[in-house]
Image 1 (tube, rainbow, N blue to C red):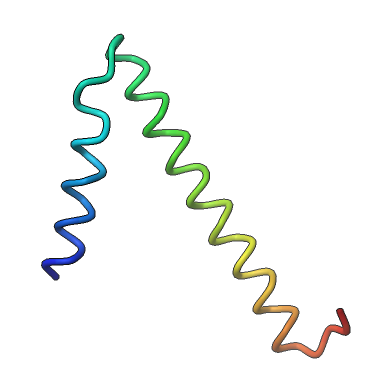
Image 2 (tube, rainbow, N blue to C red):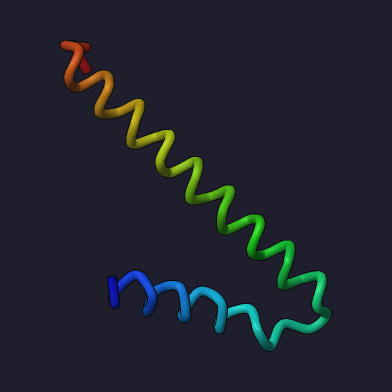
Length: 55
């Protein structure tokens, strides 16, 4: 649990000094979008790997 809190603190501190402030919000949204896309790609890869798709 401490590791997750550490990563949360690193994530929130990364955008604290962003000027202008709206840029920090845009970057937070973009980083969440990238994380979702990465998880979607990993899901697709493992789905194909475990259902017998020939690469």
